[in-house]
Image (cartoon, rainbow, N blue to C red; front, side, top):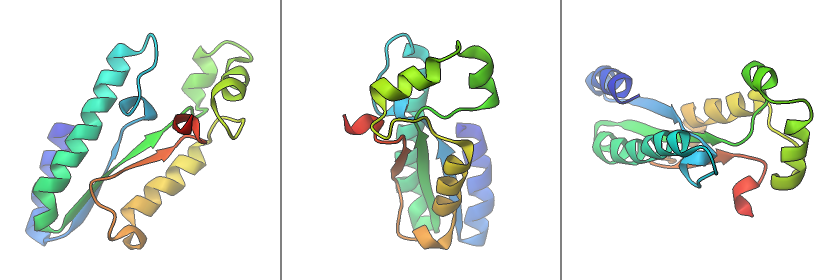
Length: 133
């Protein structure tokens, strides 16, 4: 993520504008048991985003991070045992359901659009209220 960000930032700096949306996770903001490796990597993305925002903002480049919670994907459907997603949602997500890929895509599109032109250096949670607990 660092190397890709560096490469695209150079091109954006030449144009004097751009938007970078890094993909982090709610696990980059709060830990979860048995996910130390994942939590640490996503926490790194959050701090990379904030530092990039400080460094690239003066060059006209906005940088934010998207932090999805539990999103059902083809991979999660393959590796999670039957009933896991539903039980997890019932126990941890105030909306009572897991997220969908299209909900993450919509948030990503918003952060990349001019509609979010004054949002910079932020992490946007898309987690159904999980971290509000």
